[in-house]
Length: 245
Image (cartoon, rainbow, N blue to C red; front, side, top):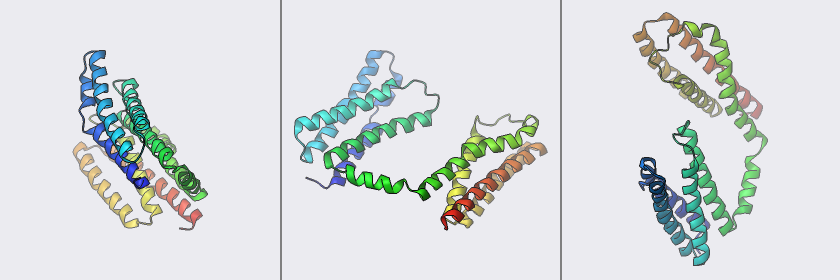
């Protein structure tokens, strides 16, 4: 039998190739009837199922058992794609849900075949430790709670800001990304990267505000940016102090 990790890598390779190289998703989205959608899903099941079956059979698994597992993986993936609502209200969440469930199924099959459940349980036990939970809590804090706090702090001036031409929810997404990056840089003690991020955003915002020629917008953006950076750095420093980093 091949090395345990070899089977996992082969299964992941087949998943990526079948999921993103085949045109079955495009066929499904362009289908005009349920019959055409079924054909699109069937094409995926056929190709992915054969790939999974070959991988499992070649790694010394009995052919009937390999075929059953392969068909189950392929059908479950196709059913998940077909059952989720369209158009997706949150495309990123949909993508993460589909891929996350598929990867968990592949990991489950691999762990069951290779008897890798015990090492994974030990790894998960080490992962769920107090320092790691504290870091996870810090990332959660700089996302939704911090965003809500900044929104509440800026609420008195929101009516004075002209958001014409802005992308929907772009500001919130930018804020979440910058806070995650800042927290990561603080935990890694990469203060130069924090300074670079501040400089880069300042330049971009300056060009945007200069074009708008609105002082209220510049002050609003400055307040939001300073609050975002201050809270993220404060959370990062608190975590590093607690962990003794």
